[in-house]
Amino acid sequence: MSLQPRVLFSTILIICLCRSAQGRDVYLYNERGQFYLDTTLSISQNQFEVWKRAEFNIIGYLSGVEYPPIYLENGIEPAGIVIASFECDSDIISDIKILNDTSEFANSVKRKINEVRVRIINELKLHSKLNGHNYTGKYYLAFNFLMIDFYKELTKSKSIPIIRGSVPLLDRMID
Image 1 (cartoon, helix red, strand yellow):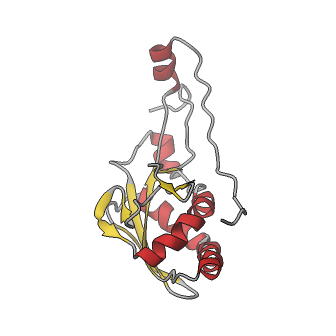
Image 2 (cartoon, rainbow, N blue to C red; image 1 turned 135 degrees about the horizontal axis):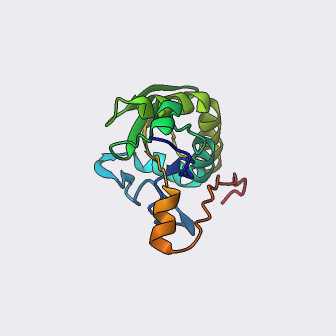
């Protein structure tokens, strides 16, 4: 399958399911700390208090997950959203796991989490110090790999699709 007729939207999007938390959106967890995509997965209320302030920047750090090149070349899309978990201790992220995928998509997610693990820890620590809540424990993330077929979109909309990936800007504003 040739990718010449396709424009690929290869920016990885973290699932954005909006909920309000003190005037800010929390995208991955509800107000009880339950993971939106699977409410049997949750974080503690203390973790949630830290997460809701750190999430925006953590999403920014993770937004550069690479679409696996061999899959991109062959037009291979994932079976669904990739769900990851990791353990966060006071100074380390460990036990990075992909809960629902074993493909190269899973490996890309694991590589990126590992690459930005220090930034994630620092973000959680910063917000933990500011609000006095413990941030240690297990966290869950969801990744949606998307490919957009240029000609399919052109046919559907009868207009030239302008496809733009956006990487979130990091927010250094503190609540």
